[in-house]
Image (tube, rainbow, N blue to C red; front, side, top):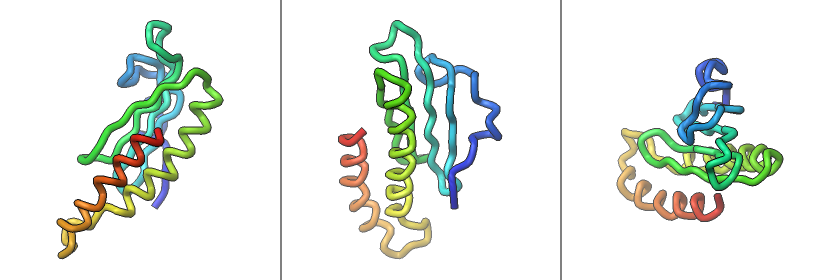
Length: 113
């Protein structure tokens, strides 16, 4: 499974969740999304990345430069794949135990980003 442009790239240039202009927007086949946007000057930083795993978590982080945001965008994609890999399949008989183990993984992700 892999990352691809969300909605075939149709969201680029449109408004994002932080009231900015979407610069990059990618989705993973297993159920995650990462969006980079340039936000208004009224925000604390000019760039924001909103990312998440569908049905499980959403997180936003802010950056002072586009270079830092672009680099972190790639790092977030790699880390979200690790999160996706840790999530159990719906029919997994050990799903409950595996879900308990995912909590610390989410916590580490949020601390890092």
